[in-house]
Amino acid sequence: MSRRHAAIVLMLALALAPAARAVDVADAMLPAAEASVKKGLAYLAAQQRPDGSWPEAGGGTGVVGACALAFMAHGHVPGSGQYGQVTARALQFLLRAAQPDGLVYRQGMGPYPMYHHGLATLALAEAWGQTADERLRDALKRAIELICATQNQKGGWRYQPKVSDDDLSATVMQLMALRAAKDAGMEVPKEVIDAGIEYVKRCHNGKGAGKDGGFAYTPGGESGYARTGAGVTSLQVAGHYKATEVSEGIEYLLEFQPVGTKKGEDEWYYYGGYYATMGIYQAQGIGAWGRKAWAQWYPAMTRDLLAKQKPDGSWDSGYKPYPTAMALLILEIPCRYLPIYQR
Image (cartoon, rainbow, N blue to C red; front, side, top):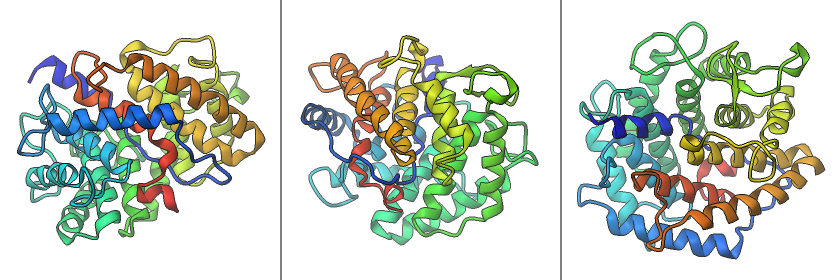
């Protein structure tokens, strides 16, 4: 397995968690964002392989799940609409990769199976919520059971499909997949989600303890931009919109570009941008402060992304399917087509 493929899986670890519907939100894409999304989706559709995967290290279930979500987030239901067949082929790829024990992953797709599994489960959950296809339900049920069975006693998950140690990235990925499945009507044990949320809270570096309000990779570690977006978003998904951890995390994010002066890590630009943008989008539910933050952040992020888009409609960070899918998901946030946005 190439280092580039492994890097994609690591980047995807924090990338695709959806979020619960906020109240009193602005739900309109900017016209420039809409045009950009159409170009990006056309690029991904043209690049899809007959088996439903993508080239350039796009053959793992995590990358395929990300691309499928990019189409579904713009209203392209599997089997219906302009790109319905593209979405359907991607989901069929995921179904073929599903193993009897529930793991949606095959050997050779990368060294971190649970990242692939979490993203693939998320895509299956959103597709099940849109279609009620029994084939999706059966694979999703097994995938959920595997996630629940591999949670450790601290509420976290790690790289391999077994009870082990833990980190924020792997934990958020599994937690978001479970939450998406629950919101789509699947049965998910409440205690598993609750334990995962408590783990995320332990990764928060609270200002009351003299720290910066961000989130760390593991409890007690250093805060970071992308991990803070992930922590904030996961708490909002669970309905903790007004938690101290959320408000402090949003304040931390607003210190960063494109509206602040700090610069996030270049290598995590796309997944960090997705989580931060989703967290600030959901912060509108807090009140006027959150709505003002969104009114500043989304246009600035849109301008930043449009400046990076290639003439062929893609985004490129050494491999195109992943950054293109992630950029699209950022721009599509106001659409709320996915079931989890419609709670």
